[in-house]
Length: 181
Image (cartoon, rainbow, N blue to C red; front, side, top):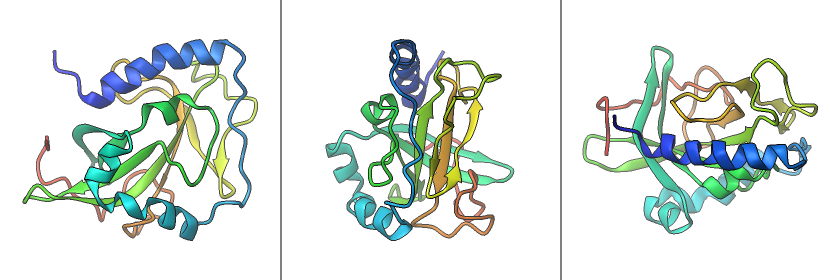
């Protein structure tokens, strides 16, 4: 059975996240308005270079996520940020890249992830996370085997999403093949 890097990373975060959540670590606080979309763009502009993202500890999930509603692209995850329950608009947990047929990756957005405190989708966190006054979606089960229950928020700061800035799927993003390396 083949697991993607995302499964492995978030599987590890499920183990560690469960331990952290059970140890009384505080839930993520809504940060208010200290981060703006322009500040997020400025903070993530360096990641137009995938090499820079890798050098900064982001790991590719390899698979390009798509659905009938659009695509998210390839996720590059910083596990240490996933395991940190705080929300920092200038330090997203995930970078979203659109793959192209020529093998190039283009930064299209970011994703913020907060692990659910008790890993139970039927009980929301006492203080559900939000960013820029936008609530995260969740709690939701992991999207692949081994992934933890979590909240997430997609922000399409580098590629227009006709469905909305914070919608999870972007019909303007394409996956050129079912599996992209």
